[in-house]
Amino acid sequence: MSVLFVSGIDTDIGKTYATGLLAKSLMQQGVNVITQKLVQTGISKQPDGELGIADDILSHRQLMGMPLQPCDLDFTTCPYRYEKPASPHLSAALANQPLNINVITDATNALQADYELVLLEGAGGLLVPINEQLLTLDYIAKQGYPIVLVTSGRLGSINHTLLSLEAIKSRGLMIHSVIYNHIHDDAEQTDAEIANSTIDFLQAYLACHYPKAHWLVLAKQANKHSDNADITLPTAFI
Image (cartoon, rainbow, N blue to C red; front, side, top):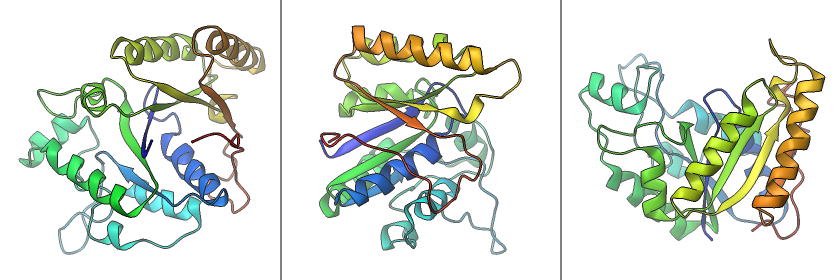
């Protein structure tokens, strides 16, 4: 594999944090890895009126402990960036800048030529519309990318996780990994009993239905850009 698609069960689930730390851990294993963002919305305009580098790409590089790369500066790692913080299909329509999915594919192909592995982070959940005709998962199914799914222990996560797994399976895609993010362990309507039960249930469910999928864990994001933040990967992760 040379591309892994990183998605989540919902928005604000920690995909960017997971993607950056995943890349960092792979680098520590000697993998030549780069991250890419499928599309970024909610970007503020610069003083010159232009949209800068995607916020999530900036976060990835900080978490990876590396400077911006030439492929970031020329926007290969995120060709489409929009000001409106909304679903990509709406943000693109409001900006009158349609998203051409072939541009994203070409960008990924260009990155594959220079790196062993590309971690492609999505926007929102799996069924977010990229444009008026295409859902995110439709595009990923066409490309055949294995999927890394980020989840958490907040109330409702079991349902959203299983729905996401069913959607992935229905398109014949591989569930490469599930990352449990402790970010929501003390959120409203969630407590230790709910979080721990969610972990137990999801681990058992994966072991039964997706035994080849990796189970990974992210610690609570007390300091999401901490230099010692890490995620432990199995030797045979890729």
